[in-house]
Amino acid sequence: MSQTVSKMTLTTEGDTHVIVTRRFAAPPEAVYRAHTDPKLIQKWLLGPEGWTMPVCINDAKAGGKFRYEWTNGTGGGFHITGEYVELQPYHRIVHVERMHLPDPTPDNHIETRFEPDGAGTLMTMRMTLPDEKTRAGMLATGMEHGMEASYVRLEGMV
Amino acid sequence: MQSLDAAFSALADPTRRAILARLAKGEATVNELAEPFEMTQPAVSQHLKVLEDAGLIIRRVEGTKRPRRLAKAGIDAMDQWLAMLRKALEANYDRLDQVLAGMEKEKHKKGEKR
Image (cartoon, rainbow over all chains, first blue to last red; front, side, top):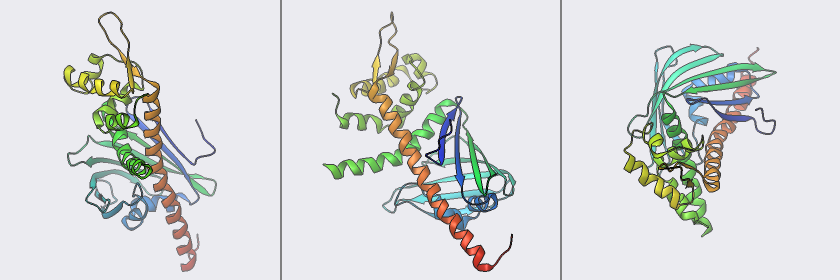
Protein backbone atom coordinates (compact mmCIF):
# COMPACT_ATOMS: atom_id res chain seq x y z
CA MET A 1 0.00 0.00 0.00
CA SER A 2 2.56 2.59 1.05
CA GLN A 3 4.72 4.15 -1.61
CA THR A 4 8.09 5.59 -0.75
CA VAL A 5 8.66 7.34 -4.08
CA SER A 6 5.51 9.48 -4.09
CA LYS A 7 4.44 11.53 -1.10
CA MET A 8 0.77 11.23 -2.06
CA THR A 9 -1.50 8.20 -2.23
CA LEU A 10 -4.91 8.07 -3.88
CA THR A 11 -6.96 4.93 -3.34
CA THR A 12 -10.56 3.77 -3.40
CA GLU A 13 -12.03 1.75 -0.55
CA GLY A 14 -15.20 -0.34 -0.77
CA ASP A 15 -17.84 1.02 -3.14
CA THR A 16 -18.20 4.57 -1.85
CA HIS A 17 -14.91 5.84 -0.39
CA VAL A 18 -11.90 7.65 -1.81
CA ILE A 19 -8.84 8.06 0.41
CA VAL A 20 -6.05 10.57 -0.18
CA THR A 21 -2.96 10.75 2.02
CA ARG A 22 -0.09 13.22 1.80
CA ARG A 23 2.89 14.09 4.01
CA PHE A 24 3.94 17.70 4.60
CA ALA A 25 7.14 19.16 6.02
CA ALA A 26 5.20 21.62 8.21
CA PRO A 27 3.49 20.96 11.58
CA PRO A 28 -0.28 20.14 11.76
CA GLU A 29 -1.12 23.67 12.89
CA ALA A 30 0.22 25.20 9.66
CA VAL A 31 -1.35 22.54 7.39
CA TYR A 32 -4.70 22.97 9.16
CA ARG A 33 -4.53 26.76 8.74
CA ALA A 34 -3.71 26.36 5.03
CA HIS A 35 -6.95 24.35 4.74
CA THR A 36 -9.18 26.84 6.57
CA ASP A 37 -7.80 30.37 5.89
CA PRO A 38 -9.28 31.65 2.57
CA LYS A 39 -6.19 33.75 1.80
CA LEU A 40 -4.03 30.64 2.01
CA ILE A 41 -6.52 28.29 0.29
CA GLN A 42 -6.60 30.59 -2.76
CA LYS A 43 -2.88 30.08 -3.22
CA TRP A 44 -2.89 26.33 -3.67
CA LEU A 45 -6.34 24.72 -4.18
CA LEU A 46 -6.29 25.37 -7.92
CA GLY A 47 -6.06 22.11 -9.87
CA PRO A 48 -4.43 22.09 -13.29
CA GLU A 49 -2.13 24.78 -14.66
CA GLY A 50 -3.93 28.00 -15.65
CA TRP A 51 -6.86 27.74 -13.21
CA THR A 52 -7.45 30.33 -10.49
CA MET A 53 -9.92 30.69 -7.60
CA PRO A 54 -11.32 34.25 -7.72
CA VAL A 55 -13.95 33.57 -5.04
CA CYS A 56 -13.04 31.88 -1.76
CA ILE A 57 -15.57 32.48 1.00
CA ASN A 58 -15.52 30.31 4.06
CA ASP A 59 -16.84 30.44 7.60
CA ALA A 60 -14.70 27.85 9.38
CA LYS A 61 -16.92 26.89 12.30
CA ALA A 62 -19.40 24.06 12.89
CA GLY A 63 -22.44 24.81 10.71
CA GLY A 64 -20.49 27.46 8.75
CA LYS A 65 -20.79 27.57 4.97
CA PHE A 66 -18.18 27.87 2.25
CA ARG A 67 -18.12 28.63 -1.46
CA TYR A 68 -15.13 28.22 -3.81
CA GLU A 69 -15.27 29.37 -7.44
CA TRP A 70 -12.72 28.41 -10.09
CA THR A 71 -12.09 29.78 -13.56
CA ASN A 72 -9.64 28.90 -16.33
CA GLY A 73 -9.62 32.48 -17.63
CA THR A 74 -11.14 31.51 -21.01
CA GLY A 75 -14.79 31.16 -19.98
CA GLY A 76 -14.57 27.77 -18.28
CA GLY A 77 -15.41 27.43 -14.61
CA PHE A 78 -17.39 25.78 -11.85
CA HIS A 79 -17.96 26.16 -8.14
CA ILE A 80 -18.25 24.13 -4.97
CA THR A 81 -20.48 24.88 -1.98
CA GLY A 82 -20.36 23.16 1.37
CA GLU A 83 -20.92 23.22 5.11
CA TYR A 84 -18.60 22.47 8.00
CA VAL A 85 -19.88 19.75 10.29
CA GLU A 86 -17.10 19.76 12.86
CA LEU A 87 -13.72 21.43 13.35
CA GLN A 88 -11.11 20.35 15.90
CA PRO A 89 -8.39 22.96 15.44
CA TYR A 90 -5.12 21.63 14.01
CA HIS A 91 -6.37 18.06 14.10
CA ARG A 92 -9.56 17.31 12.19
CA ILE A 93 -12.09 18.87 9.79
CA VAL A 94 -15.40 17.26 8.84
CA HIS A 95 -17.36 18.89 6.03
CA VAL A 96 -19.89 18.21 3.30
CA GLU A 97 -19.46 19.57 -0.24
CA ARG A 98 -20.96 19.37 -3.71
CA MET A 99 -19.84 20.57 -7.14
CA HIS A 100 -22.12 22.72 -9.30
CA LEU A 101 -21.63 21.84 -12.95
CA PRO A 102 -23.99 23.77 -12.92
CA ASP A 103 -26.38 21.13 -11.49
CA PRO A 104 -25.25 20.10 -8.00
CA THR A 105 -23.62 16.69 -7.65
CA PRO A 106 -24.69 14.47 -4.70
CA ASP A 107 -23.04 15.42 -1.39
CA ASN A 108 -19.49 14.32 -0.74
CA HIS A 109 -18.89 13.81 2.99
CA ILE A 110 -15.22 14.46 3.81
CA GLU A 111 -13.18 13.91 6.94
CA THR A 112 -9.65 15.38 6.90
CA ARG A 113 -7.20 14.47 9.65
CA PHE A 114 -3.85 16.13 10.35
CA GLU A 115 -1.52 14.00 12.45
CA PRO A 116 2.01 14.80 13.64
CA ASP A 117 4.56 12.86 11.58
CA GLY A 118 8.05 13.53 12.90
CA ALA A 119 8.51 17.30 12.46
CA GLY A 120 5.80 17.29 9.78
CA THR A 121 2.23 16.21 9.19
CA LEU A 122 0.45 13.22 7.76
CA MET A 123 -2.84 14.33 6.21
CA THR A 124 -5.54 11.73 5.57
CA MET A 125 -8.62 12.76 3.64
CA ARG A 126 -11.46 10.26 3.58
CA MET A 127 -14.31 11.01 1.17
CA THR A 128 -17.64 9.19 1.41
CA LEU A 129 -20.01 9.35 -1.56
CA PRO A 130 -23.65 8.27 -1.31
CA ASP A 131 -23.23 5.43 -3.79
CA GLU A 132 -20.92 3.74 -6.27
CA LYS A 133 -22.28 5.61 -9.28
CA THR A 134 -21.64 8.98 -7.67
CA ARG A 135 -18.09 8.00 -6.81
CA ALA A 136 -17.42 6.87 -10.40
CA GLY A 137 -18.90 10.16 -11.64
CA MET A 138 -16.77 12.20 -9.27
CA LEU A 139 -13.56 10.45 -10.25
CA ALA A 140 -14.53 10.90 -13.92
CA THR A 141 -15.20 14.63 -13.41
CA GLY A 142 -11.86 15.12 -11.75
CA MET A 143 -10.31 13.48 -14.76
CA GLU A 144 -12.06 15.78 -17.19
CA HIS A 145 -9.63 18.64 -16.57
CA GLY A 146 -6.73 16.30 -17.17
CA MET A 147 -8.41 15.18 -20.40
CA GLU A 148 -8.52 18.79 -21.55
CA ALA A 149 -4.80 19.13 -20.98
CA SER A 150 -4.08 15.97 -22.94
CA TYR A 151 -6.23 17.18 -25.86
CA VAL A 152 -4.07 20.30 -25.96
CA ARG A 153 -0.94 18.16 -25.93
CA LEU A 154 -2.33 16.00 -28.73
CA GLU A 155 -3.07 19.05 -30.85
CA GLY A 156 0.45 20.29 -30.26
CA MET A 157 1.84 17.02 -31.60
CA VAL A 158 -0.13 17.04 -34.87
CA MET B 1 -5.69 -1.30 -34.07
CA GLN B 2 -8.25 1.27 -32.95
CA SER B 3 -7.51 4.92 -33.54
CA LEU B 4 -6.62 7.16 -30.63
CA ASP B 5 -9.31 9.59 -31.80
CA ALA B 6 -12.06 6.98 -31.36
CA ALA B 7 -10.86 6.22 -27.84
CA PHE B 8 -10.70 9.90 -26.89
CA SER B 9 -14.15 10.75 -28.24
CA ALA B 10 -15.58 7.66 -26.53
CA LEU B 11 -14.11 8.94 -23.27
CA ALA B 12 -15.47 12.47 -23.75
CA ASP B 13 -18.80 11.43 -22.20
CA PRO B 14 -19.01 11.25 -18.38
CA THR B 15 -21.55 8.40 -18.44
CA ARG B 16 -19.22 6.30 -20.56
CA ARG B 17 -16.37 7.03 -18.18
CA ALA B 18 -18.59 5.95 -15.28
CA ILE B 19 -19.50 2.74 -17.15
CA LEU B 20 -15.79 2.02 -17.65
CA ALA B 21 -15.17 2.68 -13.96
CA ARG B 22 -17.91 0.13 -13.12
CA LEU B 23 -16.43 -2.43 -15.54
CA ALA B 24 -13.01 -1.91 -13.95
CA LYS B 25 -14.48 -3.79 -10.98
CA GLY B 26 -15.49 -6.74 -13.14
CA GLU B 27 -17.69 -8.05 -15.91
CA ALA B 28 -21.31 -6.83 -16.10
CA THR B 29 -24.39 -7.36 -18.27
CA VAL B 30 -26.48 -4.57 -19.82
CA ASN B 31 -29.09 -5.15 -17.09
CA GLU B 32 -26.49 -4.88 -14.34
CA LEU B 33 -25.20 -1.63 -15.83
CA ALA B 34 -28.65 -0.11 -16.47
CA GLU B 35 -29.79 -0.45 -12.85
CA PRO B 36 -27.17 1.57 -10.90
CA PHE B 37 -26.91 4.14 -13.68
CA GLU B 38 -30.68 4.64 -13.73
CA MET B 39 -30.69 4.39 -17.50
CA THR B 40 -32.85 2.48 -19.97
CA GLN B 41 -31.31 -0.60 -21.54
CA PRO B 42 -31.24 0.93 -25.06
CA ALA B 43 -29.40 3.98 -23.70
CA VAL B 44 -26.82 1.77 -21.98
CA SER B 45 -26.50 -0.38 -25.13
CA GLN B 46 -25.80 2.73 -27.18
CA HIS B 47 -22.96 3.78 -24.86
CA LEU B 48 -21.60 0.23 -24.85
CA LYS B 49 -21.53 0.21 -28.64
CA VAL B 50 -19.43 3.39 -28.70
CA LEU B 51 -17.04 1.93 -26.11
CA GLU B 52 -16.85 -1.32 -28.05
CA ASP B 53 -16.20 0.39 -31.39
CA ALA B 54 -13.39 2.32 -29.72
CA GLY B 55 -11.84 -0.96 -28.59
CA LEU B 56 -12.21 -0.11 -24.88
CA ILE B 57 -14.49 -3.02 -23.96
CA ILE B 58 -15.21 -6.51 -25.26
CA ARG B 59 -18.29 -8.70 -25.08
CA ARG B 60 -18.60 -12.38 -24.27
CA VAL B 61 -21.45 -14.68 -25.27
CA GLU B 62 -23.02 -16.65 -22.43
CA GLY B 63 -26.36 -18.16 -23.46
CA THR B 64 -28.64 -15.20 -24.12
CA LYS B 65 -26.41 -12.86 -22.11
CA ARG B 66 -23.62 -10.68 -23.50
CA PRO B 67 -21.55 -9.64 -20.50
CA ARG B 68 -19.04 -6.84 -21.16
CA ARG B 69 -15.61 -6.37 -19.68
CA LEU B 70 -12.72 -3.98 -20.11
CA ALA B 71 -10.35 -4.59 -23.00
CA LYS B 72 -6.62 -3.94 -22.49
CA ALA B 73 -7.08 -0.48 -24.06
CA GLY B 74 -9.90 0.21 -21.58
CA ILE B 75 -7.71 -0.74 -18.63
CA ASP B 76 -4.95 1.53 -19.97
CA ALA B 77 -7.46 4.37 -20.38
CA MET B 78 -8.65 3.96 -16.77
CA ASP B 79 -5.05 4.00 -15.56
CA GLN B 80 -4.42 7.19 -17.52
CA TRP B 81 -7.47 8.91 -16.02
CA LEU B 82 -6.40 8.05 -12.49
CA ALA B 83 -2.88 9.25 -13.32
CA MET B 84 -4.31 12.58 -14.53
CA LEU B 85 -6.51 13.05 -11.46
CA ARG B 86 -3.47 12.21 -9.36
CA LYS B 87 -1.43 14.80 -11.23
CA ALA B 88 -3.99 17.56 -10.59
CA LEU B 89 -4.07 16.68 -6.87
CA GLU B 90 -0.29 16.46 -6.70
CA ALA B 91 -0.01 19.90 -8.34
CA ASN B 92 -2.26 21.28 -5.57
CA TYR B 93 -0.18 19.73 -2.80
CA ASP B 94 3.12 20.79 -4.37
CA ARG B 95 1.76 24.36 -4.29
CA LEU B 96 0.68 23.81 -0.68
CA ASP B 97 4.29 22.82 0.15
CA GLN B 98 5.34 26.27 -1.12
CA VAL B 99 2.60 28.01 0.88
CA LEU B 100 3.70 26.18 4.04
CA ALA B 101 7.35 27.08 3.44
CA GLY B 102 6.24 30.72 3.06
CA MET B 103 4.26 30.58 6.34
CA GLU B 104 7.32 29.24 8.12
CA LYS B 105 9.47 32.14 6.83
CA GLU B 106 6.80 34.68 7.79
CA LYS B 107 6.78 33.29 11.33
CA HIS B 108 10.55 33.64 11.68
CA LYS B 109 10.41 37.20 10.37
CA LYS B 110 7.88 38.13 13.04
CA GLY B 111 10.10 36.46 15.62
CA GLU B 112 7.34 34.26 16.98
CA LYS B 113 8.34 31.54 19.37
CA ARG B 114 6.77 28.12 19.55
